[in-house]
Length: 78
Image (tube, rainbow, N blue to C red; front, side, top):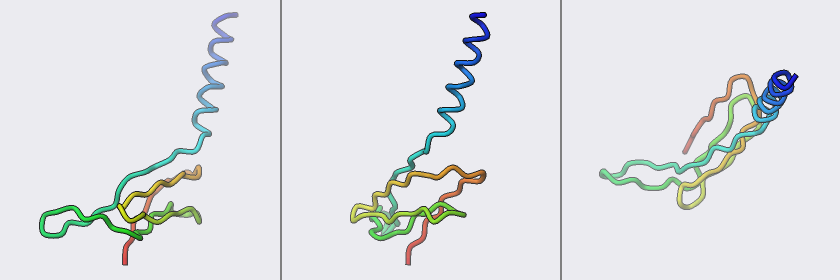
């Protein structure tokens, strides 16, 4: 009986942990004369959703991903 309860608790934990949203964060840079320069205003978005953000003056972004079968993050800068 203890093994069945342990297995059910482990299964429930797996379902709960996989359902949580994941946050991706980082910095967007470009190389200029061998140095990293932050890109302010770079677009960062998740494909197949309307979920996106823009990098700040230091190139930093943070994006909470929506659950999707094929998660992909796209970076663009004009």
